[in-house]
Image (tube, rainbow, N blue to C red):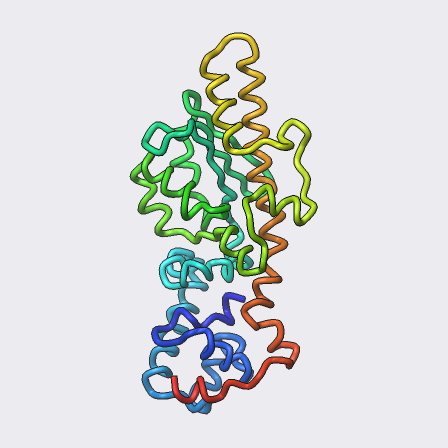
Length: 270
């Protein structure tokens, strides 16, 4: 999908991109071959040509930072099949919103999951997260990433330079509304028994029980970690569910199948 993407060129929107696809321009290489015969305005052709050249160079250099910077934030999913070293990320807090409120950070590469705990190894997250091309979250743009930036200001730059696929708005595009647990239920995704039925308020309660110490404190932490792990692991399934449907939602699959309307006017007048 990434090499069929043109919306990061200045002055090119979704309708123009769809029109290019309809004309058979479904990759950067095909654009280069056909640019002079597409009837584009000079401004659009110059913008597209410069963007395609920069995109090809960035792809050859495996430069995820370029696409994180140039793609609209809601379209970072298009790079997921190309830059596959993604970190699935979720945090828990003590109920506060300031520095020091983050209690647990779950981070998975899609296979293995590590959970960082305040008072143990939370600070190691900053170094570990830098090996990823990007991150997958659920409502991370509104909660997880801002919280982590407050906790560790250096993450402002690190997050800015990496792709971010926020599954919450992505799934909303597909007609799925509600929180992570609600959508899991809609898609028949199950949790381990010890995490079933828990929510964010339970995560706060379990952390406080752990911090109080005494009998049952370690069990409270174990349950909290199981809850966080399920948040992270289930996002892997949600991303796999979402990607082909997002391709369809943006019109690409319909055009490949030959069922989309021709939008020549959008190309000619862009």
